Length: 124
Image: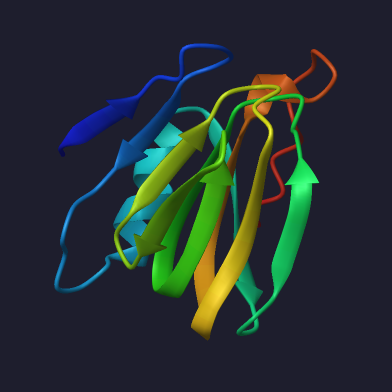
């Protein structure tokens, strides 16, 4: 994996993972995120959907499976397509908008970021 760090002069660093992949292996990505102690869920958003600026209390990771989205951090647009990953530090303000084909992505949240306790494991 190739990592490119986009450290802002102020505030938490945002880490981007750019890698061109011809086929996204959903199961392998979920396993890799869970190995990082992340609670993983899958989300889909329609074309043109957007998220106003907000923060999370805990580390957040997004990995795009299909489609595209733009995540805006510190006024900088990060265009994410299938196989791209972005890591957001706790308290990092960000917003997002979905591309014209919609987006399906994995959302990972640090398990210990839920009020100082571990998040429940909801897998069957």
